[in-house]
Image 1: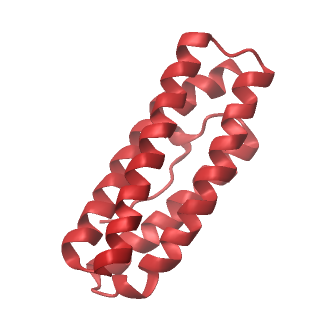
Image 2: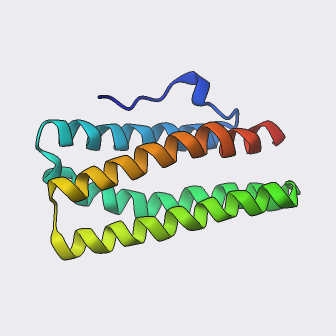
Length: 132
């Protein structure tokens, strides 16, 4: 199973789209590593990348929302999704640090990343992109 960026995922804001593409590339590498039983090699790399990504990318989106007077209700929904991702990511990261790489945890990470990313980008970020 590959997890590829497609043009229908584009939100129409160049920097956001570039960052999303990179995230898709990283998550896809993780998915492929899990399928090939090589996930322990890249889990830590992915976790470090995501920690940085979360702050860099979410800050960009949150700055856009503030600077362009994005709808208050839509901003609240968007910010809540960012907060939920941060919370879930920290929980998974803590579990990874305690237990190390294992099939069950790697599957949880994969499902969380894939489901959240597809849903968030295709709905919430697209709405922001349309506004901008």
